[in-house]
View 1 (tube, rainbow over the protein chains, first blue to last red):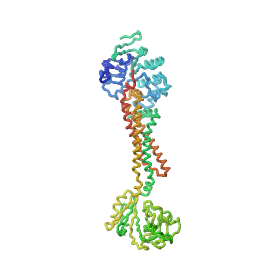
View 2: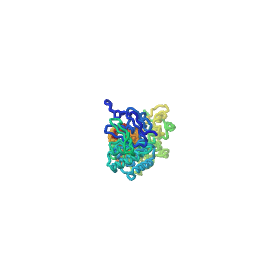
View 3: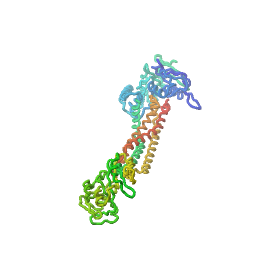
View 4: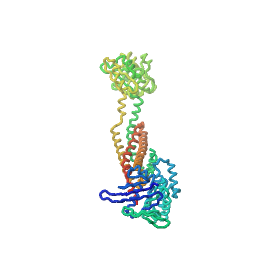
Length: 235
Length: 390
């Protein structure tokens, strides 16, 4: 099976005069079906890593393969296509477009694919159904609670049937109850073909993941898989 | 491109979501185009009645006058001109001098007598020059053949004489009584006819010892051949013989007066251009701010797979829409304004089709140029920065 992500000695450097290695020789492979948490303090490089995984950025050196494709040689159009086809994003701030309804927001992920608007609408409603918001489809983001907004964002991420959902502190702005609901939905998005990668500070979120990658100063310092059966983390 | 429909949907949704802002930036091209339409429409309509007159009269009437000592054209000139291919009809006339006209028994004062022209004309004159009768009839071929003493009087002269429609009146030409059989309406292109007393050419020969040759030819030619015919008519008249007839186009003067005041129009157009320029700057300014305010939207659209090009295209399409909406509304309000003024002043409404077309083109161009910068700015935004990951 093709790995969703394959990183080999990936480095990402910022700055012109003073170079800062946000990522320093990272190697990581994530397979479909994994629920992986990336944890670490602020400045540990986990956001940079997420940007690279999401093809929103390119490595300074090293190779990054997404679904077997080396992104180094891709132009903006190809990377955008890769993003649209393979990756779904969920952000801490939800990032819904304020002037669009819930369904309209979900539909943005289906634009420019040659779909009829009726098809788009049908797929969007199905995705909202999946996150339990079918009856809120025509509400604007301002009319929805934080938890509902994040579920709309999740529906937007899932509507394209991506190979991986990248979630950035998905529960950071939510109360416990809503957080649990969103986490449950994220968990249920893990299938045999699709992985979920969560970047988080929150130990409770990390605890839900089957795999935990810890970062410090741009490097991976620990990569453990939980064996639910024995209730312990192993290297 | 099949993405265009999606793009239009996204752009219109973006514009309609911010109605007040959209209305404000639409106002720029709207006012500019309305001003453009207003200036051209008003200056055109102000001359519209003259232009309409010109159109109804036609610009294909020529007048040939004899020059030199004799003040006469060759006797055969009428037939010669009639045989020119581009000539559709022709009427001859002779100016008679040294005849004093008096209205009934009263001898008119010297000045008024001098202003009165006596002309001997062909019965075909009205049809050639497009003259109409106010009342009565024109001189006909029976009058001409018999040489009877009938006259038709020009509009101004009829007013001076105080002629009442249908009145039986006799006027005296050097004491000889002539019966008034009709009065002409004013002839717009040939105002000298308005002050003329017209008699038949036979009467001129019989009563006034005229030699029967014309001094003036009125020539109607095929539309569009006016200039060409005018240039060959002197030769056609003289056949290379003596005399140098002068050909004039009476509608030329009227055409000149129908010309629109260029200075006024240019000043107005400069102001309209300024309005459009300011409108364009407004679009560029507001949309640039909009790009900053919508960073998160741009970021998320990039994240769900829209390329830089499509993001740029989205903002470009919004600007294009502003131009189209502003242009169309500007055309409508400009046309409405011109129509209202024309109605108020009793002008003939003139809006040439190229004016709204040009207005729309200008509005769209302004918006497109104004949209380039915000579109490029939107396309260049780094999604990673706008989404503030982590």
